[in-house]
Image (cartoon, rainbow, N blue to C red; front, side, top):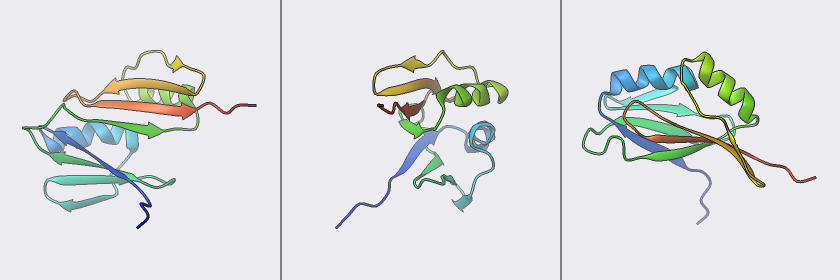
Length: 114
């Protein structure tokens, strides 16, 4: 067996409110396979499920791989999502935000060594 991809899931208290917030970052969702689940799929593979789970809301985290951390910060700001300055390390540049429920979202760009 070979694992080919990963699909992250994050619980929220109010699905409709969370979907509105996540749409500001990821655009319109790609699917709503069940009444309590909304999904986004990404061009490089993988995806995100945001689902109604009030008892687990705010306890999740996931990382989104991006090609340009500064463009991502600008896009977050344009969407009305405040973010801290990126952390720039020898292997990754990252910026961490939280959704309205407190789930942690990291945007990360691997640093290419020359």
